[in-house]
Length: 261
Image (cartoon, rainbow, N blue to C red):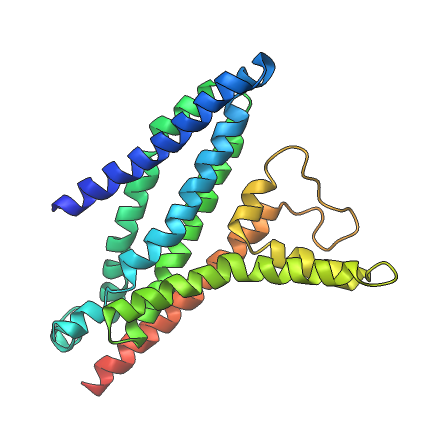
């Protein structure tokens, strides 16, 4: 946080978001009717949230996946574990340092979000929920990547594994749900209720689906499991459980290494 890295990360992050929003807004003004331009926030806000969510999926693993692996490569891990610092202190210190970058980038996008909100067509409550989804997803990705860092010695390999795990978590489960949906379309009759329940449960684990559920015009079938529970609620709970499991396993790994020493 004290070096130049935080400045360049935040500057590049905001510039990318600004460029994307600016291009989309120019296209809207030139081609869309006035009724849609007056509600441009309903288009720009989801775009901003989705782009941020995609960047979080890429940045969060790189921030924390090398936290312990780099200590091994520099041959300082044994000294760190054998110091007076408890494993919980090491765990929350390393994960907290990675999360600081993530929180910094999220807060850095607030001026852009305020701009899209001023264009109309979006509720402040939906924006707050979207930021909650992104923050919880970032915490989960950092925690899971830190777990890989405790298991893999090489920093680059730990980062690649962390990114791959995030891709499987974010894209693999929805792809599996889409596969099941396509498979159901090949049936001669209608798919069973249990089949559809599994499909929607898989979609409930995805942060992009949770954000999409906040948009109007995307209803949830009334006959599936957890119909009365918002998609974002189930997704946040699922990711919090993953975060707890990742931190617990990471702590046990650090304690085991300390006992060996």
